[in-house]
Length: 266
Image (cartoon, rainbow, N blue to C red; front, side, top):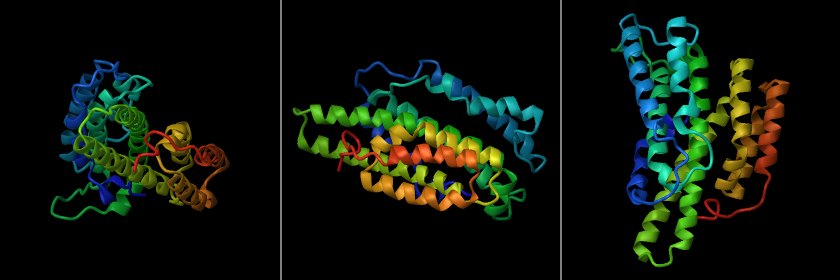
């Protein structure tokens, strides 16, 4: 159960898009205190991480000393507020995605012996709870980023006075962003194929996918929606009934055929 961000893409590269939209005026969905909240939560995570590593361990949800600290780095409401998200929110959201990716990477690539390569298969089992929670938070951040990217796509359609070269650069950046975020979503869906995924973690992942299915569907192409359905159906044999119900909601959203805004960008 290894999330895709660390096998396929570099989310850090997607931050390049931020330089293209800084200065745009819009009422941001992210609260002014959101970045500070995350920075403080990340600082506490790093402090606890360094202390745990001295004992060749990592912070765990099951550890009372770690639980509240971990909840803070995955608590999206004070971090990003609520929809709607605008183009001007993208730089902050992408920075938050990068930081969340680092949390997941901490667990996926952990090695108790710094002289040995990480056993990612063992880590995916040992830290399944933590990887799942980080993946759920990542889906929430990605959903917000896709909505903000959709708003950016609308501004491109309306900006007829901008030079063609500028429009092409911005479109290329948006397409790169969409592809990168979609790969993370694909990787999260693939996690559901793991027969060792605990029922509670199945529920968390499928609930998050269902909750964010509408924005995902409006952001990716109709063809890519069908590909996601195929991947989901491949996981059905190992999913419990509650998780299957969630995935049915996801499939229903992916069966939509409309394509405007970010979906129509090419």
